Image 1 (spheres, rainbow, N blue to C red):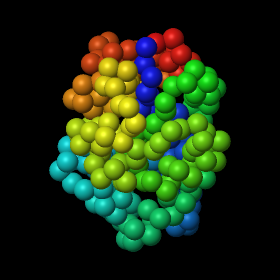
Image 2 (cartoon, rainbow, N blue to C red):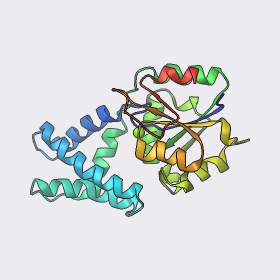
Image 3 (cartoon, rainbow, N blue to C red):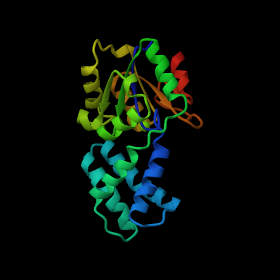
Image 4 (tube, protein in one colour):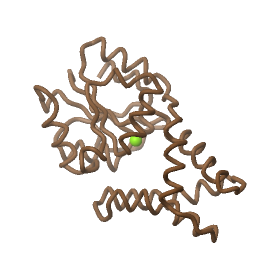
Length: 223
Ligand SMILES: [Mg+2]
């Protein structure tokens, strides 16, 4: 039985896809441009490419956050200050605390079973804390591991070592990583030698390195 849960935030307990779409649209409109869905898709390609490079430790976080909007706006032949656009985006994102179905109920149940819950997120500390608070789930966690504060990103071993070093009475065999990303959550857990649970909202992937795969968070209660 697992006693300690390392839980990813975006698209695992908070609906990042919904938050991203609305926040991105607000950024576009704040520059007096009409929003179209294709714009979001273009931005997501640029953003994903930068995040892939970050997970591979080829670039730093600053480069992701300071350039993703200036690179995107270049495709519209429009020059904007990337840092300013990022700041607008974060303030919209901070007000987007939509929960994934069953997330809150599952966390409450796990807590009542005496489990220790920690966030394990590649994200911006203040944005994530604000969203968890607004979603009413901040107090359910025993601690927060968020890459900006930790100083390294999932899937690096340093991220997980930091978590292990800061969890009281840590036991590797009683710890599980729960998340929606094969490249950061599951790969990181495998590298760090802990079990993992892949959460996907749609159909199951054919095969993955995850110990378990679930499509509803309430299934965590019976692992
Ligand atoms: Mg995620």
